[in-house]
Length: 156
Image: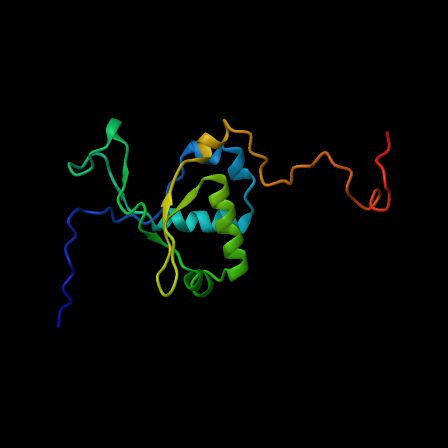
């Protein structure tokens, strides 16, 4: 028996791959990511489906390609562990850092047998305007610590 291939409402390109914009690669937040976090980001970019701006159905401004499944991208812990050999704790740290820097955003939080759905966003461009501390702890002005823990009064 011959398998029937379901027709898609729009033709997708046959080329598998992902492209990264120059803004992403030259961003200082991208350079703060470690290898596993970059790997998770690359998998997110591979999971997106792009419709070229040349087609009639892509109604975007200025000829920019449209991400069709943005907000519906699923990447589960089980998939990361079995398919890509990324442990759960590493995957969770990578997701948290990607969310913090503005590369991805949660659309629908998952739970009981329901996977989380993500957006791929470009908030990392907006974060440069704000004073982010790049994940480094901000030092407080107090004198709490080992040197001062048994002193009753602060030295003047």
